[in-house]
Amino acid sequence: MSLRRTAALALALLGAAGLTAVQAATRVSLTRVAGGLTSPLSYVALPDGRALIVDQPGFVRLLEAPGTLRETPALDLRPRLSPINHGAFDERGVLGLALHPKFRKNGRVLVSYTAPRRQSAPADWDCTLRISEFTVAASSEFAIDPATEKVRLEIDKPYANHNGGRIAFGPDGYLYVGVGDGGNANDEGKRPEIGNGQNLDTLLGKILRIDVDTPEGHGVPRDNPFVDGKVARPEIWAYGIRNPWGMSFDRGGDRALYSADVGQTLWEEVNVIRKGGNHGWRLREGAIGFNPKSPDKPLAEAPRVGPRGEPFVAPVAVYKNRNGFKKDPDAHGISVTGGFVYRGKALPELRGDYVYGDWGRIWGVPGGTLLVAHRPKSGSASWPVEPLALGTPAKVASYIVGFGEDNDGELYVLTNGNIGLTPGKGEVWKIVPATP
Ligand SMILES: [Ca+2]
Image 1: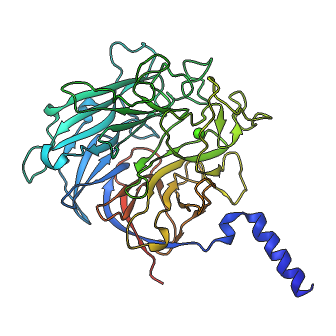
Image 2 (image 1 turned 120 degrees about the vertical axis):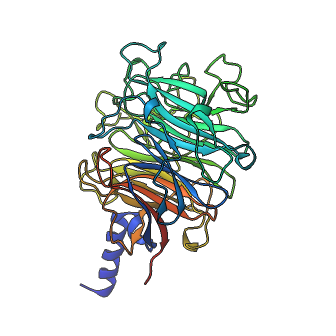
Image 3 (image 1 turned 90 degrees about the horizontal axis):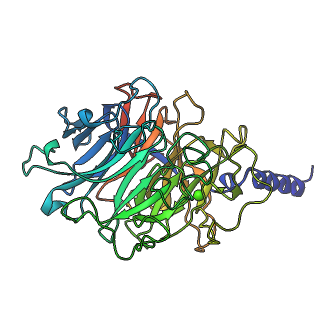
């Protein structure tokens, strides 16, 4: 074979393998900063450099310094949680935490968790997603008194899964709440005719935007897209969401809101959330037309507009789900876990890119994949996705359940070595440059 032909063949092979093969992989290492947890879902930096870690079975823990996790929880919410299957896979528990924008002055902390089904909910529904505010006692001990709880928002959940529950304050001072489609599968749930994601009468399957600077409950910001309540619940900021598992604002650039959206069978998404945007679910998954009767067989033609004739907001980055694309090298796993736009200093080649991961490659076998979606040069192009190459350890031997960001913009990956909520194998790792 001539040299020229060999080179042409090599190029053709690279092309066939997709973008992952043609981009130099960025190498990172992981340094463990906390262990002994169960399923750490959120890492939230405090202004003084310490961090709060949400542990799904009911705790908020204080990370006093790397490697020093305070034994006594800052907050123990176990008595207020819905029932949880501790030994098995379960999506319920404490799910998110955000510091009020004026936390330094007012000590207010917002926490989301699944509470027992409230009285007004249908008797066959599962639980109630609750967004509550607590106030931190003004002492160096950093205790959050459960008696300070103020319930801001409650959303009844028909099923135990797809809770979302990730929360973040925007640069506008309002609280954004990611809510899953209600659960079960294919968004057929308890409202099969349309699905919850496209139904603007429910808060399920949405990104919400609320004002928590009210004496009780919550307010609706005047510039919410459906504020008059005529077409939609006024808290809705964006819709067409399946399970927003990881949501964050870019601390730089245009301060956009990024949310992962876990796919059903074929495609995993990262979305830049738009005001009033229809992000597709369950009419679309990635770029395909979703078929609720047969989720592995897309519709022959994908819908181009939503129920009110509105165009869809396409995800910025997608990858294939291994359940639908078993042997495809670009199928990075089976459930996306959202991360952050990297704005730190230690990994300059990742600046402006979205760093995130996939929970696991195979159900029941711990082993997630760290991913990066590269910001394209032109604003409208799709972001190429590739795995982050690992130095030490050589692989992530646990499920990737969350990400965190510190005050310097450096990132953390949160893992659970068990598929369920069995204590002891939850860890927090800082993402650092790989040593050559
Ligand atoms: Ca979507």
